[in-house]
Length: 522
DNA sequence: ATAGGGGTATCA
DNA sequence: TGATACCCCTAT
Image 1: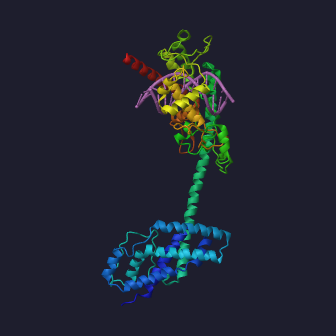
Image 2 (image 1 turned 90 degrees about the vertical axis):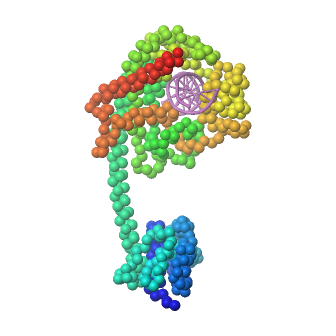
Image 3 (image 1 turned 120 degrees about the horizontal axis):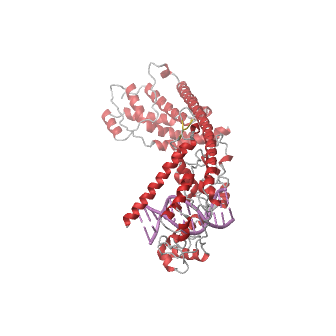
């Protein structure tokens, strides 16, 4: 039987060694670790394995060999994942040990043993590839061995050319040189990445400045506009002026702190904290972002502009003409559909210039001859208890049944009221429905410090609206200058007016649509 | 009839 | 003044 030339075995040895090192290098950062590993990696197991394979190869006819290889004799016994995980674990352990510079003999032995096992496994994984080269370089022409493994080495190993001096180098030199190459490449890519990162950071910083400027100018604009609006629109409840003009958004915390701001669901009601107290309780777990080390702490939300469109002078006039005070006085006490037992209406001051209209909603009501808003009626404890019992009995969603069960207690309420109340109970008292025992207060998963109160539903919907509305008109040009098409050249008022017109048109369209519907019904 | 979006009166 | 409680509208 022909003995395999010595060179073949050396090559195989080098290959697997180099591969292991490439692998380790790829997953390791510190040079000291690599140095330490060098001492721990004799690979005797792999060597033995190789010798065993060599012998069995030498004693078998070629056809049989090929069959057995195809049949899976040399197929990798491991998935790469299986190899990777323990190696990574080992690596982190090594890093810890080396970081403390206390690798005692016993620890070293454990590590060495584990690495031997891994090396053996690595050999199994790499076997077919190595053998292919092995066959080609040693017994070329005599045997045709082609490993049919579908598995490829994750890190292809450069096979030293036979003319290359490195082929004759000692094992250590070979590996060392490979390290230098790889380390150099690593360093180069790292500095390249750092450069890219620096450029990006600079860009972001510039953008932040631009956005802050924009924010300030927009804020000023909003305030000015708001002053104008206030002069022309008198609200029924002056306390809600800011609310109706959307000025509350001006007081928002820096939104960019909010993780996942882009996520629309973030500020959904279900995600809101049940109370500030609860927030406070949770704040220790989730410190306020301002406590973090982030040097790019963000400015406030850049698009905090409320056009206050339906509260402009024009709108106010339109409202006055379409909704005369006398009409309203006449309508007090109107029974809406006759289905609901009305509670007494609120006194409305129609004298002078009090304009009782805060929103489109009210406009619609007036236009269609509906009544004014019901006065609020507080839910009594009894009612709430009845509602809870009803939900337990009939289940959530069967409001009519619940209402019919207690027509007296729920006098003046509709099934919709029950539904709304239950919604609030769920929302703010974390009430669950179903079994009796589940009617409890549960800790809310929303985690936020009290210093950061997310915008409420109204605020958020405004922000969303405004962001959408102004997305096209405000943008950052490629030259990092703010493109304030809407506000440039002191044409702000004009541009804004045109915005009003379009908004009014939309409102008109809606109204007309409604009219059409009504007439169609008739 | 119900669910869910949304406005606003009122509370703390 | 922000947050909640209550009420209203409308698609399904």
